[in-house]
Length: 411
Image (tube, rainbow, N blue to C red; front, top):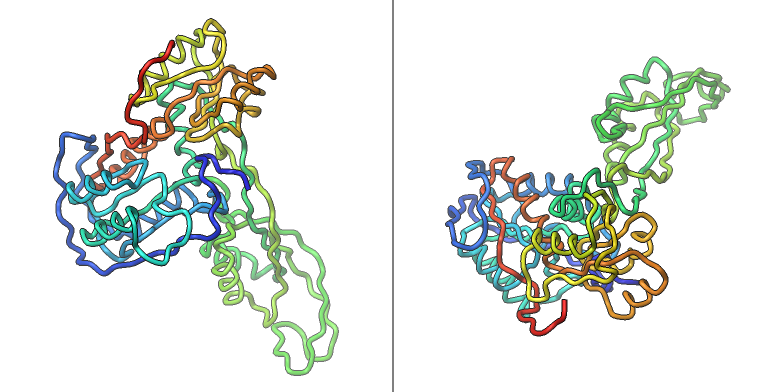
C-alpha cells in the first residue's frame, strides 16, 4: 500500500485508547512568549463532548484505513477548559502543553500509527509525561486532510486562493435503509428513524422517500400478527420507505425501527451506497491574481512560517500563474491531478526523480515547502473554532520541522 497524504507508511495495526482517572478540576493555562492565545474562554466541558465536536468537524471515516485518529489517551468524562493545538506531538510540544497547564493537546499527526504494548522510548516518555500532568492527547490526521474546513482549506486560505474546491472529490460510504410499513404508521416511523440518525442530508433532516404498493404474507403458527390471521394469506397496502444514514448510525437506527414498527417481523434491509460529498476531498484548487511563478513562490514564503529549508520551486520563473492547487503534507501522488486543473501545485516532501519526471512530461509547476509549514495554518483555524465554544485555546509557534539549518543554494 502506498503512503498516505502525509507520506506515512501504512502500519499493520491500529492504536487502542488509554484512559486515566483524574479530577475534573484542571489548572489554568499560563501565557508564554511562544505561541498565540485565542479568545479567552470560561467554559469547562467534558472531553467526550469536545471529542464529539472534533469528530463532527473531522469525521473519522474520512481517514485512511491505515491511519490512527482520535483519542490516544485521556479520560472522556474529565472536564476540560483549555487546549493547545500543534502539528506534531513531539517532546517539546508536550513540555509546552504541560507548562501551559492545558487539559488537551490536539495535534494533526498521531503519536503512534501502529499498536503499542508498552510506553517505551521517546514516545513512551512523552505519553507518560502528559498522562502524569493530566493532559489528554487527541489527533485529526488524514480525516482533517479531507474535511472542510480542514488542513487543505486552511492552507488555501493562507495563500489567498479564491473560490477553492477539492482537488480530488471523495466518495463516502453511506447506508440506505428500505423498510415496508403501513401508510398510517409511516410518519411515526420516520420520526423515530430520524431521531436515531437517519434521513439527514446536508442542512436537511427527516429526509425520506415513500412509494405505496401492495404486500403479501402468511402468518405461520406461533406468530402474533399485527394484521391478519395465522395460516391465512394476507394482502395489504404498504409504503416502501427509504432513508439514508451514516454507517455509524446503523445499530441505533435498527433499534429504533424494531422498537416503533407495528409488525412483529418487519421487512427491512440496509444497502451500502456511495455519495460524493460536496466540498469534501483531498487538496484544494482555486484562483489567484495573475503573477509569475517566482512572484507566487515569494507569496508562499511570506504566507507560511519560516523553516530552515525555505521554499523552492520547479518551473520557469516567468511562467504565468492563475490557478493554484494545494496539498498539505506529502502531495507527490497528486501531481497528475494538479496538472489537469492548475498552473502550479503547492505541497511538501517532493523527491528529485518525481519532480524531474513530472516536469519532463509537461506537468504543472511545483512549489515545495516544509511538511510542517504546509499544515501549520490548520492549527490556527481549528483553535479559532474551539475558542468559539468557550475554550481557552493556544497555537504552538514551535517549529517542529526536523530540519534545523540550511546553507548554500542558488535561488
